[in-house]
Structure formats: structure tokens, C-alpha cells
View 1: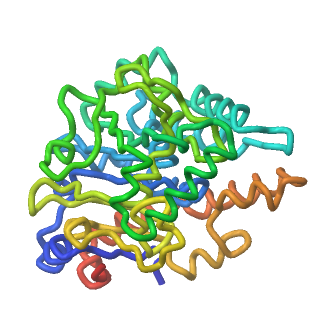
View 2 (view 1 turned 45 degrees about the vertical axis):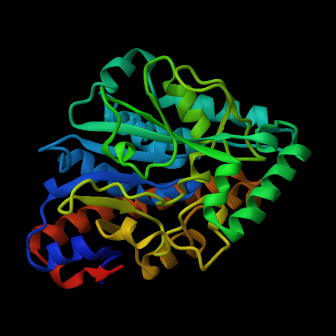
Length: 355
């Protein structure tokens, strides 16, 4: 039995069933903002990187928010394997105590970024010919921009309330800001129905943008006035784009790859508990989604994918948390190879399921 499940939206499902799918059809790879859950994607990522499967015909656009942005920042580094593994080790090794506050947690994230992103290599990374990095952040408004927890909490509470009625109302509190590498904005930002602002990524703002996209509200301090973008407090990109909340495909034959830790796709961070909230159908048409099977997840330490709650659960025993997370990384190493074999053998035609 396979350790992964593959689902596809209408267009990609038809391509696979007709035998017309190939790797060059994948134009975007989406990295959701799922906190420590990204560790289960590590083996999948490293397999794709090692085999240079993607980005051969046209550059692959890597779109990440929060943890997804951290992952993909390693993809574009000159020594991507070393960078990715340094990210994993630094991320797993983070520890926090009751003395930590939003500022010290932001500094811890900054230290992780410094551990795997070399400043001298950024000009080369941003000119990567195979991969093009796009990082999503959220520019906060009104009370959600406050660094005083009571006021920020009031703003977030109001945002949750209005979001429950309509996701479009979150624009009262957060503005999607897409930072992009390359000479021109990515194609999905040029569509008439794109909602948000854009700004170029460069060696000056790169690390600040990464930090901002990982700045979880009420937990991590925001990043102020990022160079090259409108002034303001920038926070976690998952506020606007948690798993998938846009249509990235430009053409009907394009495919958008998403590796997730679960079947359910959550559009925005505030939709997590709104089980009725789903992505728009048009955003799923071109999607090729891969996620671990339930049997595989049950074999992981604790029978679950790592999550932020682990920091609290193992607050008095961080060594056990680290041991569990490293075991998840080891157990996930084969997931990418399984997917490659599924595609190469043609088994994917029989195994793929509809979204």
C-alpha cells in the first residue's frame, strides 16, 4: 500500500487519465503555511530537488507563505541540499520557554534564516534559472498592526468574526502582499481578479520578507516597513493564503503542484475551524495534490504530523520533541521516490483520485 495519496482537479485529472501528463506541465509548486507540519514534506522536496524533475522547460514558480516560504527559500540557494538540511536542523532545534515573548521568538526565526540562507549567495539565488521564488505576506491594518497584545487580540477577534460571514471581509484587516523574484511579477499577479499588492524581492529585503511571512499573529512580532514595499507591519502570509486561496495556473494545460499534510485544503488561516470553508472550484481545476496516507500518519511518532502544539506538549522535554521530529523527517524520505515511481510506471493513471 502506498504511503501517499494523489488527487487532481478537473483539468489535471483528465490529463492523467488520458496519459497526457508530464513534469513540464507543472508551472507552480505551492508551499502552504502549516508550521512544523512542513517537515513531512521534506523527503518529497529533496527528491524533486535531487532529480531536477521540475523547471526544465520554463522556470518553476515556487509560491510559499510562512513555513512554505522557508522551505522554498532553500530551493533557490546555490547549495540547495545543504541549505535545506540546515533549515531542517535549525528549525527542529528551536526551543522556547515561558520567558520568551513575541520579539524573542522573531529573533529565533531570524537565527534559523541566518543558519541556512547565506547573504553573499542571495544575488545568485534570486537569479536562479530553474526556480523562481514568490513569498506571500500580509500587511496588517488598524488594530491587527498593533504590537500590544490586547489591541492586536481585539483586531484579530474582529477579523475572525467578519471572516466567518465572508472571506472577502478579511481585506478590512489584512492586505495580501506578494514579493517576487525575477524581472517581472508572476503571471497570477497580473490577472484582473488578483487582489493584493506586489513588490520585488532583492538581497536587501529577502530575509525580512521571510521573517514577515513567518510572523504568526499574537505569537511572533511583525516586521516593520520592508524595503521596496509600502510602509506597515507585515505578518504571516497564511493570513491570506494558508494552503491555497488563488488560481495560479495561467493556461488550461498548466498544472499546480501542492504537497500537503492532509486532504482538506484550507484557504486562509482564519478558516481552519470553519469546516464549511473551501477553496473556490476554479482554484482547484489545475491542482495536483499529494499528501500522506492515513496509514502512514498513524506510524509517525504520536500518530500525527508535527505541529506547533508540540512546543507546548514537550516544553519540559524538548529533546523528545526533537527526536520525534527527526524521526518524521527520516520516515518521510521515501515519499518523493514513491511519487516518482508512480508517475514513471504509469500507475498514477489508476491511483489518482478526483479532488
